[in-house]
Length: 267
Image 1 (cartoon, rainbow, N blue to C red):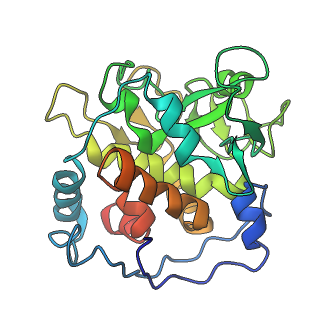
Image 2: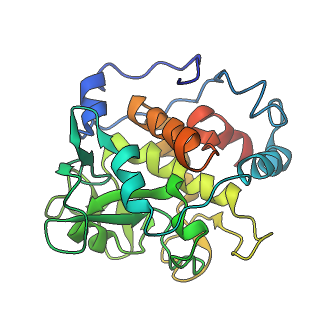
């Protein structure tokens, strides 16, 4: 079951049906994230609650590093469960475009959906070997062509629209997801920065406040990601996804979905 939680107010314009369907939401205004309480605070997060700064980041790293790992091939079937359209069990919701597409159309052809790495593989040479490049917490279904347009661009505000954008924008060196998933993207990026600290075979992943990071193990822009976390709090779709990843696949959680206020507490 989903954790019981005390959550901050979300603008009425983000009607529940629209959020669950992945539709583009109106532009939002950032407000400070209020503290949340979950059923996991006395168990899973027991050693993190009450901490801030580097102590909180370190504690969360230890907690979420205990996980089951999936192969790259296994992601296909997992995504059909984690990102299922709540209004059509035969479809998945595509992250950036917001479209609902048949689960059977997974592949590499035009009209298919494939596996989008929100933390781009090239930012730290993640590869598709079992590890950060197969971590389900930052991999989402997306239209093949939209995925290619995003490429390995960092995240920032601004840019122009494109085919099947769903409200997402892009320019030469950055990508802005549609309003309804801006917070989702921010929380996925910051999860990766806490989970992968360079104490295993992989790079130390960190957010920074620039774009065009290339192959460096950084993703930006942090100041914008923090704004997006405030503007677009976790919704029912994102919370369900976090729970499914925890219960069925990796046995670890994205702490910033459970506690979005921890973003500001760390960064």
